[in-house]
Length: 62
Image (tube, rainbow, N blue to C red; front, side, top):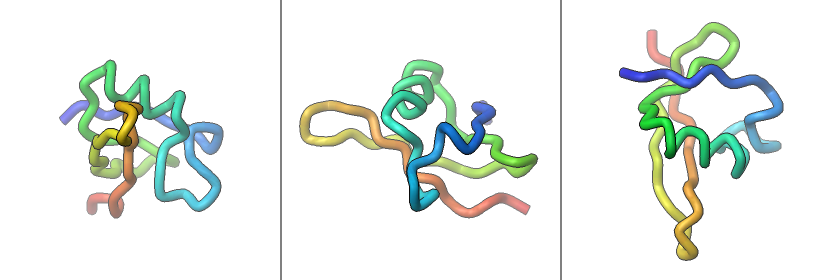
């Protein structure tokens, strides 16, 4: 597990996805989870039709 620390500026408005800039950092860094407000959250990397990385945030792990 490799977690990237993020803050509110890295999360899109609804809180379900990372911003494009944060998603690119996530993809390039080989991360599997994010750490947000002290919680470790599993995250899924996918790509849009144009190849832009998209990172969806899952539920915090207990």
